[in-house]
Amino acid sequence: MSEGVFISFEGIDGAGKTSHVEALVQAFRDAGRQVVQTREPGGTPLAERLRELVLHQPMDALTEALVMFAARRDHLGQVIEPGLARGDVVLCDRFTDATFAYQGGGRGFDIAVLEQLERWVQSVDALPAGRLRQPHLTVWFDVPVDVAARRVAAARSPDRFEAETRDFFQRVADGYARRAAADPQRFARIDGAQSREAVREQVLQAVRSRGWLA
Ligand code: TMP
Image (cartoon, rainbow, N blue to C red; front, side, top):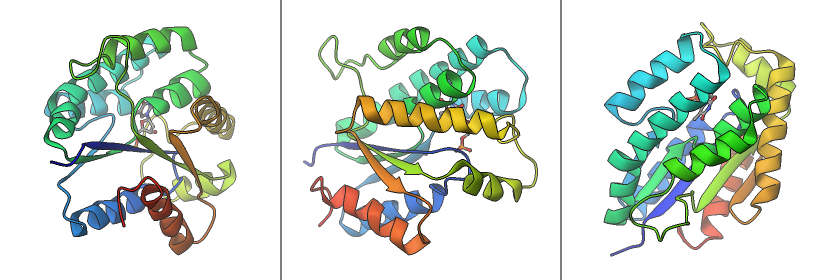
């Protein structure tokens, strides 16, 4: 049986990641792998309900962080861990780096609290005590804030995050850059300002270089 592979996709709103996740799903299926395509917040019935709340209901920063991690705990237990245990490829549109970038960077929420929540939530039975479940690879779509903002402006009804200011998204982008610098082996930085085809090639290259696709 193949080893499970866990890949997350990150970037500020408007970074253009979603269509590239779809392309990668297809590439893995064409290679004969079982793929679980999922997203955060969300991916289970409970987490999708929490997603609706957190995207649309006003709440303070601690509540927001707790809801993100509550949704993540359910998602890990119901979807991600079972998928990895079967040897599937789990492709997840956003994971914990988003919490560090949005709640930590964007909202300026206490990073030490987020780190504690990360330790509680991402301790899983399949890993030895002290090791946390993290993606094997995080594909980070790095785009200038102004480019992303133009794409988001075209969206019909923005949610609580999409409605945020340029300064907020600059802090989110800086938050992603800090997470990437702290774990450079896990992150593949994609220059998301390039053409769609060039971005697609960079994403495939990041996966091929790990030996998961020929
Ligand atoms: P999406 O539109 O890419 O599905 O993401 C939903 C929004 O939720 C997006 O604006 C980023 C935000 N978000 C957080 O603020 N913290 C998190 O931990 C996650 C997973 C998403």
